[in-house]
Length: 465
Image (cartoon, rainbow, N blue to C red):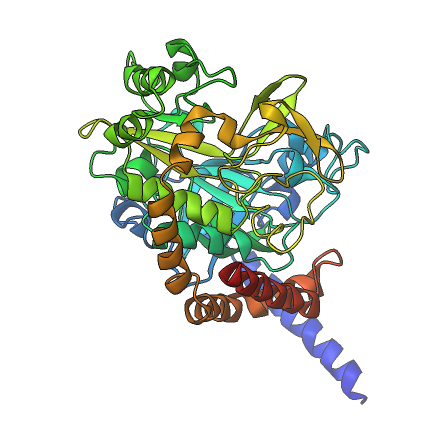
């Protein structure tokens, strides 16, 4: 008898035995229903026992620089289709999160990003006004642990942010940039790489970057319960402070606690009123000069040109973005926190990004402090040093030169940057290859490696120039 026919008959026999044995049921026995297909996944409600690692360990587990963690997300197909249809809506849907063998459910998930994050990844044709359905495998995502306003936490965190890095073939800019800031003593988010699996399918490598919120401030500051503001500068373009309510409207902590913005508002007023001779002393009274100048040195070295020193203009009114301010109550001090580094490093050697380049060197001004067009797209900008606070920082030239040299000799040195980039490359290489074999729009290993090598060249140029 042919072997194939024998195997078929044997399989039928085994199946019959299983059917016979299963039919021998005790009275009142009801067989368990078969597991539902993936399309019928229902998000469960999992009540923790209290012994889970995610309840008893802190966020250092998540941001361990020595590990490439995998995060698994299970979402009902209907919910997946809902957010895929309109990612710009940034609407949360329920899902289950599994990490290191433990599941927490339900949690919320949505796509996230500004204009740049959606470029070439949505069906809409106007890149400046993102719209339409998802067309890329990867989009940046945010997981909200405290779903439905619960007090749940995950390794001490309330949110996880997975950044797609779609416009960074090296997959290194964000992690490296934040590492530079932190190495120089600047309070900045932690960032590591992570594998993301959705409904059983490996999606790709993401940058898992720390949310800037109350958990962040309590981790980074001795007194972490102060006010955190997103994207409001102390002074308006006309040199006058914003109103206190404007600051309160930008709060990311303490919103419900009858907040006062007197500290940052008072600092702004003192800057506006200060003479040129007194300006540095006024700044030093509320800021750690080593910290803020270190922030500026890193920012200008990595060309974070989409950050707080790029003032974009709409008509004759200009503002900046991609930063936070934190007020530390006990010391009555202010701290500038960097954010959104996906476009950093691009313009180190030449201005390759058509939107972000800054025309001026640090502390310089152009066009008599009037808005002017610059870059391939002619995007209108305003010189950062026309802002009185920024001009005051630029006057700390001795400190700037000393800290710049410390940065060049330390974290930016060839030895340290190559060691970190090589270690991180070894962490994610297999995942980069896996992504390419799974998804046609993932970059190849050769493209990725060439981008890492190009980043090393850019860093060498930064050290020398």
